[in-house]
Image: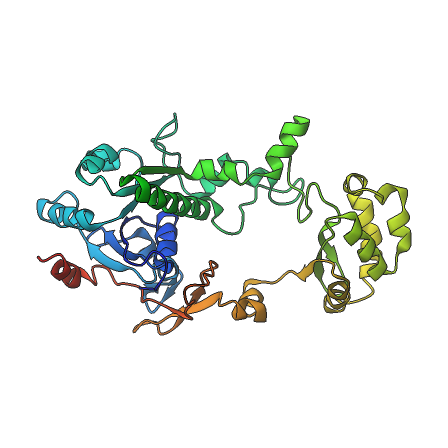
Length: 382
C-alpha cells in the first residue's frame, strides 16, 4: 500500500473493467487499503482484455496496482459470510454492477446501511440508480455517443469519432472518487455513511462545458471543429514546416505577442481580427494567414520563439513521445509496478501531488486472482 491521506481506510472493491477499478486505483494511490472481491474462476473481466505480456493483461495491470484479491461467490453462504466480515471492517464499498444486482444479492444500500451505518457505499453505473434508463447496460462508447461528446469530436463532415481515451468510464471513476472523499468528511461530522450514485451518462453531460454554453446562448447544437477551440481564436493546431504546432493565444495581449513572433503586425491590425469574436468568426482566414508564415520554420524553432514571448504552445506528441517527455518524467507521471512474470511494467503515475506525502516511483504489485485469500482470511480471524 502507498502511504497517503487515506491510509488506515479499508475499501471493499466489487468493481470490474474500468470505471470502478479506476476509482479504487485512485483511492489506493491515496493510501487506502483496497481488497478486490472477484468472481471465482474468471475474476475481473479485464483480466481477459489485451494487450497481454506473458499471458497477463497489461490493461488489467494498469488499473489494479496496489490492490489485494480474494475470489468470493456472493451466492454461496460461506463466501457471503467472509464478504460480510469484510464489510464489518470496511469504510467504503465500491461497486459498478447494473442497478438492482446488489439488491438481488441482499446487499442493497438500505440493507447495508442498517447493518453497517458508517459504511460509505459508492455505485458507478451506466445510467444511475434512478430514471427510465436505469436498467440498461452501458459501456464507455455508448455514453460517449448518448452524452453528446462524440457529436463535437472529430472533423466537420467526418464519421462519428470516439474520444481516444475512455472518458465515459474514467470520468465516472473520478467523480465517484470525489463523492467518496466528500462522504468521508461528512462521516466525520455525523458518524454516518451515505450512498453515492454516479452515472457514466451524467458525467458526460457534466464535462460538456463550453458546448452547453454555446447551445444555451444560440439554440443551435454545436458540431465538431477538429483541433480548433469553438470560442477562442487562435487556439488550435497549425501547420509549420515539418508538422503541427498548437498555439493558444487566449486574449488580445497574447495575440499581439503572437503576431510579433510571426513578424506579422498586419494580422494584429487587420479589422477582421481585432477582437476574439471576430477572430473566431474569421478563424479559417486567420489560420491561412498564420500558416503562410509558420511554414517557413520548423515546429521546434517556432516553439522556442513562442516560449521566449510567453505565448502558450506545444507539439502534438504521440504516446511514446508524451511518456518520454522530460517534464512528464520529472513530475513522476510514469511509474512502474514489478511483477515476477512480466517484469517491471510502466504505467501512468498519480497526478495528485501532496506536500505531506511522498510520490513513489514504484507502485504496489498487481494481484493474481485470489492471491491474498489466505492472508485476508487470517486477518479476519478465520
